[in-house]
Length: 77
Image (cartoon, rainbow, N blue to C red):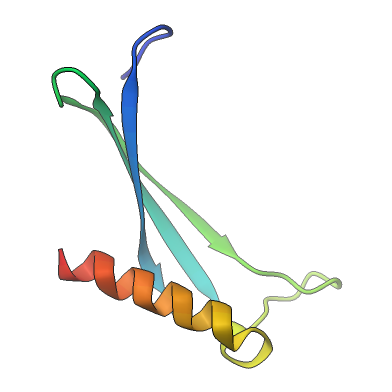
């Protein structure tokens, strides 16, 4: 855990992407010591105006390619 006043570095990466949903994984480290303070993950999706999940392969192919590459880069580490 990090406390107020401490300086940390946050590494965020796309850990999963399937065209509809994507996960971002976070690692928070102390800037001076490099000690890992916490690890977390958030899950996301894109929604249409009526609240339905959007398939980025069809609706935003450029963004789909970016997220696909980010997830591939993360999984190669």
